[in-house]
Image (cartoon, rainbow, N blue to C red):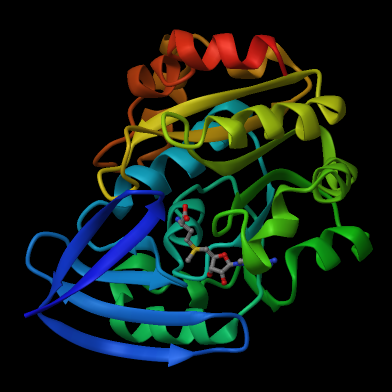
Length: 283
Ligand code: SAM
């Protein structure tokens, strides 16, 4: 039995027994592999970093989508950067108030392979009439578009290779430019216990564009090292502090069924560990 080893950290990593390789390719952007594992089902990795697995993807996709959308409460236009597996698009399309979703993904091959080998991630969302899929570099799109959005979700790879630009000040400045008044920006921001520098860097780069810049968290088992930190950018603290009772009303009115997200988890997810707060003090 061959194993897939993720060595994201010096001297520490995780390994998956590969029961079967479903797809492997060197694309324009990177090395893409999709394989089956007994514990996590179908797993996708890009350039040696686990991107998503069948078994635990719901935690990440629900939290990166429903927290900003239920906090906003009346988002009509959503922009997704990255997210080639379709999990974010699936969750966004569950919101009846959303009228239009643009998804900007740099690599068509990721979409094609995930449709075929991880079909439950997108679950048909790529065919939703509200969805507009653009194959482009996310930073080019936000720098050049005249479109405006209520929520922007950056579901990109780690800040290495093609994903690096999506953690730059230029990207954040242009995302802010593309937001309507009252708009919210969220992004995957690494595992704070292992990548605390990414959190501090994001505070320094994203903070200047939003008066309410903070983070929230969700434990995604295959993003090893503890709490997956999600970056938040807004200009109205009240959006981040919507009372649980109000969140409950919005959640129940939506009719959306979830497996991780609920209003109490939403509200509590903004409570950050002391070591994260301490690191942000120096940012
Ligand atoms: N959930 C994963 C995580 O947290 O690491 C990310 C999953 S998703 C597969 C990451 C997506 O970002 C990939 O589909 C990749 O093609 C896309 N991506 C990376 N850099 C990009 C860029 N500059 N513009 C648009 N999409 C990009």
